[in-house]
Amino acid sequence: MYNILAILFKYIFIIIIYLFIFSIIRLIYLDIKGMEGISFDDVAYLKLINRKDSLPFKIDEHYIIDKVLTLGRHGDNHIVVKDPYISKEHFQIVEDEGEYYLEDLESANGTYLNGDKIYDIVKLQDGDIIKAGQIEFLFVNRK
Amino acid sequence: MNKRILSRSPRNLLFFFQALGLLLLLIYKGKAIDKLTLATAGGLVLVIYLSNLLLTKITSGDNYIFLITTMLVSIGIIMIYRINEGLGIKQLLWISMGIVLFFLTYFILKKIRIWENLTYLYLIGAYLLFFVTFVFGDRRHGAINWINIGQFSFQPSEIIKILLIFILSSYYSNKDRWKEIKNSSYYLMGVIYSFIFLLFLQKDLGTALVFYAIFIAIQFIYEDDKKPILINIGLFVIFGLLGYSLFDHVKIRFQAWLNPWKYIERQGYQITQSLFAIAEGGFFGKGLGLGHPDFIPVVYTDFIFSAICEEMGIFTGIGIIMLFMIFVYRGFKIAISQDNKFYRILALGISILFGVQSFIILGGVIRMIPLTGLTLPFISYGGSSILSSFVALGILQICSEEIKSKEDLDEAGD
Image (cartoon, rainbow over all chains, first blue to last red; front, side, top):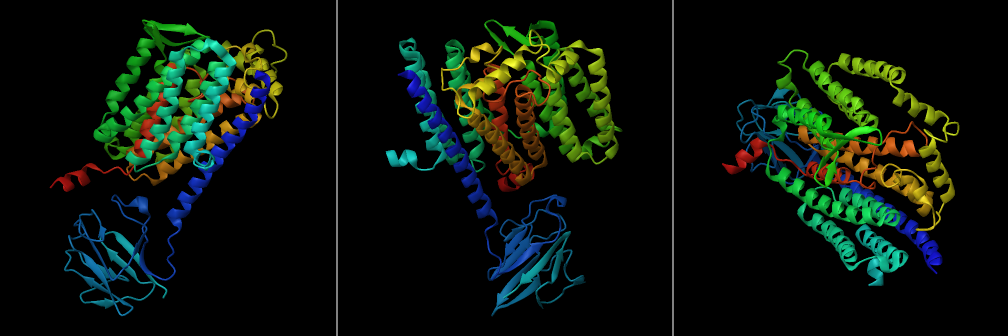
């Protein structure tokens, strides 16, 4: 009697172990997909040009621009950068009727657009490079 | 109820697996099981289920590593209990303590954040443990690596393993500070080699190999200077050849690996019995309780994999290997997404530890590489092995969370 049970159970055990493995793989797959699943097709965003691990502070690879996006050392900014070369409020990007404008917020070390320091509000084009401190962003707008 | 069990949540599958295992063992051992053991086992099933549920609530990090390890632990305990009831009951207690230690480690590491700067403390601790092993050590299965305290005995090398990872992490995450000392990489190498040499003297070859693997991997990734890495690899080859020609116990291992059939009476006995057991099991195994795993010496620690293959089939064996692979993959992913360098190296070290240790012993019992005595993490019987593995798991769990650096915390306090 026991033998029959043992033989039956060994198949059940194997089935459960494999179901377990596959369910974990499925969950991990969903996890990875969720991580990279944000679509950047129809939004304007900033993309980090620096290698992320070359910077000694926390920063993300992408920032989507929704109406307004500010960068600075202070915690209230959309992008908070703990870098001494960045001012408390450093720069901001504002959307107006589908166009995006970059404005320096009187930062100590300035904001650079394609290598030139900006003094006024500048209109951004797709592919512009924005530099503040040691961080470089690529502006992408493929609308 | 039925629908919930069959739903594809791994937590429920694990629960189902454990419940069935318990049921089968109950029928197998019949009246021999006393009520206390049954209550402990039932309690453990419940604790594991609740721990997995709780962990999804309290941690912002990884939810899979604990799930995978509890599956491995369950497969192990079913097999150990079937081979030897007394050890099975002890293993139940070790696992319960391990889970408690896991949560303790998790909360201690979450609250206290001073671990990066204690390099010297780890060093002193490691040497002290080696010293204690040599003075009070006990020889078992050819290696002096046990210490007896009253009724209990433990393997200090299991603790040193974790200390080693802490030493390496604290060194490489504070690389700038150590640069002030000239040739600090070579000092570090000297320290690690002294560990490996001491393990060699204890004849604990498997652990020495694990130490070496963790060291070379982390050095390879984080050392800026190429020279120490090349020297390290060169030294390994030289010491390997020297060890082979000077020490008999190394030579015996190689001979037993190359041709176990010739030495089937003595040196090759373990490995041949292990191969017989795996071959006997076939794809689906003999069924729990219907094989003869007791023919293999030290079956409940080093050779547990062969016993599992015999009674639960090579498919379960492949399943175990896959579980270890997913586990190590998760560990690497945790390391990659961790921003804090100290915790990143910690996560990397622990993933390498589990990966290499399971590779060495699994490869050993199937005669892919020479056999060295090591426990299979989470599956083998053994108090120190289970406890240290759960501590390492707790550390990995912390590494999977976002670590706020000290400056961030200070600014939040202002």
